[in-house]
Amino acid sequence: MSNETPAVESDEDAYYQGGARRKKRGPSGCVAVLVALVVLAGAFYFGVTKGVDWVSDQFAAAADYPGPGSGEVTFQVNKGDSVAEMGRNLKEDGVVKSVQAFLDAAAADPESAGIQVGYYEMKEEMKAVDALDVLLDPSNQVSATVTIPEGLRVVDIVALLAEKTDFGVKKWKAALKDPVALGLPDYANGNPEGYLFPATYEMGPKDKPKDLLAAMVTRWQQAADEAGLEEKAAELGKTPAELMIIASLIEAEGRGDDMPKVARVIYNRLDGPGDKGGTNGLLQIDAANAYGIGKSGTTALSSEELAVDTPYNTRLYTGLPPTPIEAPGDDAIAAAANPADGPWYYYVTVDLKTGETKFAATYDEFLDYRNEYLTYCETSDAC
Image (tube, rainbow, N blue to C red; front, side):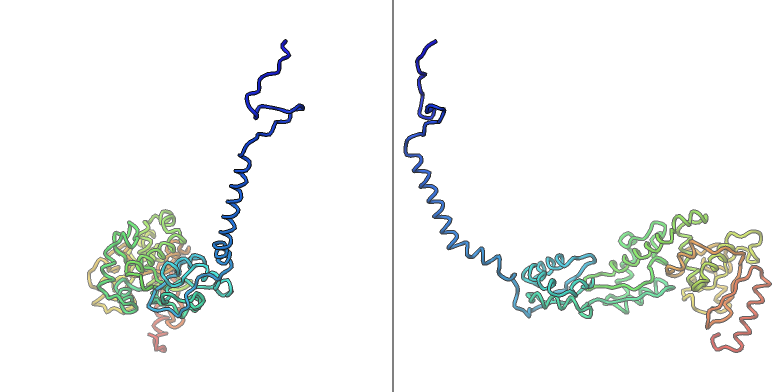
């Protein structure tokens, strides 16, 4: 073996005895120090001239307009909007200068959790706290409230909507011609009769007739789903369209707790055995006859009017009329889907003030109740 010491290629490869690496000689260490000094100097300059502004921004109040603002902005609070979402929408509409300013104002007022859905008339460039004050007062809402009672025909609903909104009858009728936009079920065959649900609706400044009508059909769908309309129709051997016709007849004829019994009378007359209780399959519901001649179901008809031949004349034709005759509410739809059990084929309201109605299984029993009603009318001004 050779005892010669291996050649050293560079200082980086040289070691002291004991294994310590020999330090490299030269100017590189001085350069590193100079670079570090330059970086520190730059950082110091930034901290003095720029960093002060950054620190100030972190502790400054959120950007806000001084108010009171100008112009008009119709702002909408949507269902489910958080305060942050409202702030973003307000900023986008030019009402507040920053989302944070609105959040700060809302955080300082515990009532901000109670802001109601709706439309509000506001201004551009409002102070955030002033914008919040507008939203906290429901009286600042700008919308038309329309209540549709149970039992109205489409023609009555259109007249009421034209009266309560800025849109005329023609606009409402035009919107009714688009059943797809309204969301009508296929089995309505494009006819909205019976499917414009009676309830109270808000119509905002940006809403069009089709928007409100679609909301009414959506509300009907909710009632139909709650009643299990399609499932119950199958159980009862009817179509969903037929159940809606029955519901409209119940709305015209019944009230309150009597509705399921009225439903049973209708089903018994439609499907009952034999001579069907003496009605021979005729529903004999005068409200349907009235609809056929263009009158409300609450109209008292003369004998001549009752004899008018229309597809809705339930004294002439057996079975159901072709369509619903008015808009049924929750109770009537539920009654059509869940008729009471009973043998009844007739009913007579014997007290018009209280609404007391008696149900009969036979024609003779019906005659007794009718006489009771006639006696009542001799002493009552309600007849």
